Amino acid sequence: MSTFIPCINSITLKQASLEEKIRLSAQNGYKAIELWNDELTQYVEGGGSLDDVMNRVHDADLHVPNIIAVHGWINATGADRDKAFEEVERRMDQAAKVGSPFITASPSKDEIDVDLAAENYRALLDLGEQHGVRPALEYLGFVKGLKDIKTAAEIIEKADHPDSTIVHDFFHMYNGGSSVEDLRLIPADKIAMVHLDDAPDTKAIGEYKDADRVWPGDGTIQLRQMCDVLKEIGYTGYVSLELFNPEYWEMDAEEAARVGAEKSRPYFSA
Image (cartoon, rainbow, N blue to C red; front, side, top):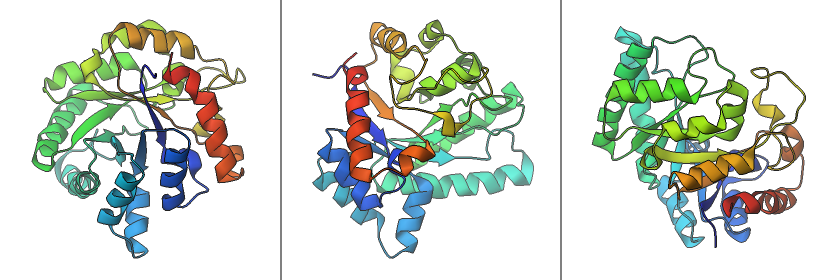
């Protein structure tokens, strides 16, 4: 029996259609699938509907725990903020229509003002209450500002909102300089999602890009220790395989889904 809920991020199977991603996820033992706003938009523009997506997910005995993502909000002020939040609402509406309780709130690549970030994150959370979707704060190890757990924890504290949560990502922890022990800074009930991935020992910390991610266990990240800390703090939620490796996208989707499940299974039950 898994310690965590097995999930896959649909980007891991980028070469497959949305329908195939859903089928392969269920076929390989996942209980949930993360989807992206852009693929939902593309699906609808191609003649599909969000109701159809939700029905396909339910028919596969899966559910959608998180949608990715809202952007442009963290440094925005004035008219730029209004424009960013208009798009945020559209994306929140998509998340709600496919039954997702969370949507990832991604940072920009630039330096940030922590106080402004906290103010805007609180506004995102207030907006999320209206749509029934909770924005989950994401840190990215290759950006200048919000790149580590400590900064994310500071924003969450300053935002001071009961619905605040975080998306942990083992790759971004490693690349952004967060320690395994930093996982203890965020209580289990404030974790919306954990992304599972690895990285080879080929670059300096901070220089890795998304394409450098490899199958869990094939790299140098302390995945087992990270899972142990999550277990110790009482986290029993989603752990989602999220890879952007173009070599894996060249694989047959059936094979990629099978290998991904095999490589991930030891960490779902860590």
